[in-house]
Structures are given as structure tokens and as C-alpha cells.
Length: 94
Length: 145
Image 1 (tube, chains in turn cyan, green):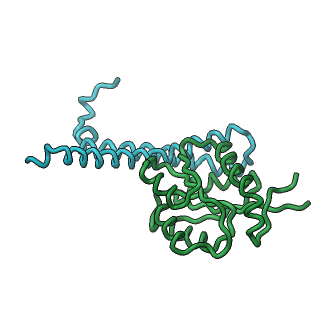
Image 2 (cartoon, chains in turn purple, blue):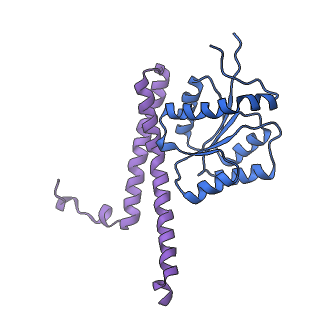
Image 3 (cartoon, each protein chain N blue to C red):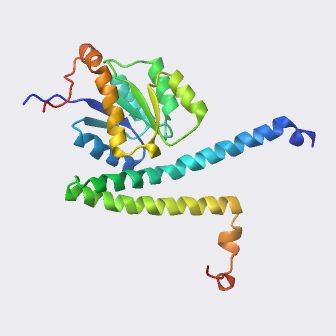
């Protein structure tokens, strides 16, 4: 189709892709932000034990959240090719 | 000891980040009030009386841009300090729109360490201290040393 090859079509696709990548970046940055700030706060040594106890499980939660987001992103972009169709018995360990 | 406190409204939907910013800001002697989304934040901002608003952009119910538009349509009852965007969304167009709607500054959350956040907040509160105090019926200022 002519429209698909036109400059407008490509620009539109670029915009969609750009917005998608921006959204993914923003979503991934959220748990990273928490971990980065939590580590920085912990390193000051100025937190009470109660605050440390509150922060640690949240750091763990942010780490898990980050892994889940990356996994979801891979699954979406590869349409499950890698995550579902890979046969573990044929997979060589690095 | 005379102790007056700056009041900050934090509009952030991420519970962990709310908790983190609360620890950081309270350690500096600020009083922090929270809103879990843009709609709740808009209600609180319309009441006014905050020295500074830290506003996230991507939120359920009403996003940051919707918050700013809503506040422009119906302003605060009491004086309200500057609004700083704290977001992880790095879109130029959104940042420009937020600035055009009266935001003082756009900060990327992921770029900030706790001390950076405190420095940014202090810089705006110090710069606006005399003006905010003169306008506001509330007591404001930093705790005296």
C-alpha cells in the first residue's frame, strides 16, 4: 500500500515506537529509582532500625518488580518465542 | 524552642516511593502530606496552604497534566507554593506542557539521590520563603537550630 511506504506512515510508526520505548523506560525506572535511593539512604547510616526494617523488604519487592517487568517486556516483544518455546533440555548453559 | 515547619504536598501513586520520600523529607524537618493519585492531590492542592508541591506525572484516576489543568481551572483557596514535577517519564512534549501549565521545574526521579532531592526542595523553599510567609496564614520556616 502506498500509505505504508509514505513518509507520514513511517513518522507515525516512529512516534508509536518512540512512545512505547518512553513508556517502557518510565516503567522500568520506577523500581530502579527506589533501589537507588534506598541504597543511598542506607549508606548514610542515619536510619533507625525501624526504618531499615521497612526499607529492606521494599527493596526486595522493587527487585522482583524489575525482573517481572523485564520478563513481561521480553514476552511481549518476542511473542513468547524465547520464553515459551525454548526447550530447557536443548538449552546450553553459558 | 520556636519551631515552624514547611509543608509539602507529595502527589505520588507509587507506595514505596511515597514511603521513601517521606523518610527523606521528614528527616529534614518538613511536614509531608500525601495524595495517592492526581484526583486526591488536586483536592488537597485546591485547599492550598502548602509551601511546595511535588507532583508525579503518570498516575491513575488523574495524571499530573490533568492535575495542573484542574488547578488552573479552579485555583487554591489558600496560597500554594511552587509545583515541581518528579517523574520518570522523559517526554519532552509532556515536560513542555507541564511548564506551560505553571510548573516551576521538571525533575527526573531516577536522577535524584536523597541529598539531591533535599537540595532541590530547599532551594525552592528558601527562594520563596519571604513571599510565601507573607501571603500565607500558616506558620512557616525551618526549625531553628
